[in-house]
Length: 508
Image 1 (tube, rainbow, N blue to C red):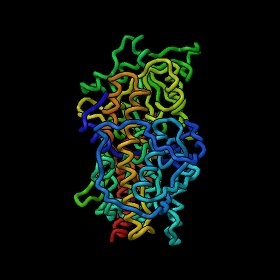
Image 2: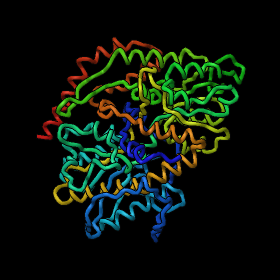
Image 3: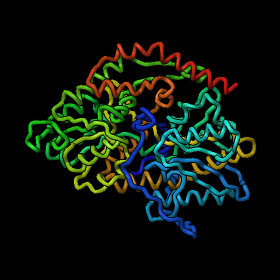
Image 4: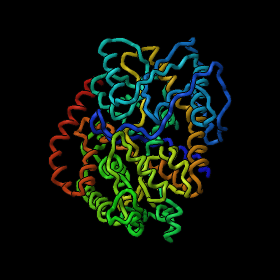
């Protein structure tokens, strides 16, 4: 189950990540699928390592010897489930991820002579941290040195001059393996970059979408696992339709397709469940210009073809069922429950569900493959991550030597995360504990290797939330792509110009 070093290099070069950005009150960007009550802070630090690193992770950084004399580094982060253990945990508890993060912070603190102080919000408001940073900048205070927040709800304020250009941090080496190079490509703008992510933020991995399939149900139906289809380039929307259509059983005998029946494919068609197709079908929104700014590049014909195929898969398929969106994306948990109870042969879920109770306690064996491609002419599988994954930034109020200190802290946290937290998550928690067949472990590498982000998802709130349009097309089973997207042809470029004008003004 070990891949080569080159594959792991690519693994961390994915981006990031992105979806569900409706309204702040309930915008499809809040998880309630886990109860993660922090443990009590211990008085004595335990420096034992939860997982041994292997050579492929044993890569040193180039930070010089630094000592900041015990200075506190104030990091503002969110207390949302699946993110509240990224910056810090309160104590060792024997879980590999928890203990790796605890020890990472001890290592960084000892190495740099700092004290990491994590100030967590409730996590219920995706815009709370952005508002707190805006207040800090407008009042010229310096309470927070750094922020870790959902990327879509923070990067949108770049044009307001709230964040430091991280290229100015001399100790921050964004070419290193622990920084997501795909994200760097999408998030860099002009001659600056204001946000970073990668090994430092586990949500960048946890929020990637994949296709989970029930191996027992496939065996009973006499259907080959989709591994070969992925490897041969045949794993497409049409292929998934063909193998899912024969699984349906009316378990309660009421002649109605409902959530107590058995299906070949279960997903969510009106919210984040369809966002994954922006990447898996390689549907462009924004592209880079020669001077590293952005232009609107929607391919309406390709989008229309994708909508036709997705609607066919979900709505013209006796073996498919769509779970309606519920508060705080809880439909993901409903889908996981149906899957764990052998009532769904295939489902579209984020990788975090592998850590959830339903899949942990699942009796049947399951495998993991990417979300299908548009068609066989598409040469690569691409993976999409819910745009609430975490990115780090430094407020513009942090300047001079203290800015350099923040660069050193970011670099140390990211590099140590790569050496210890990533192996705990990727090799132990995902591969060894939940990934119960070698082929799925290879597929997991393929999924993360294919991580693809479009800048149009990062800046979605500034361009009329274009990427949410797919939810309407699929949720309503319509293909009015040409008329709807044509109405945006003038609006979105103007909105993009406004965004770019602000960023260029900030950059001088």
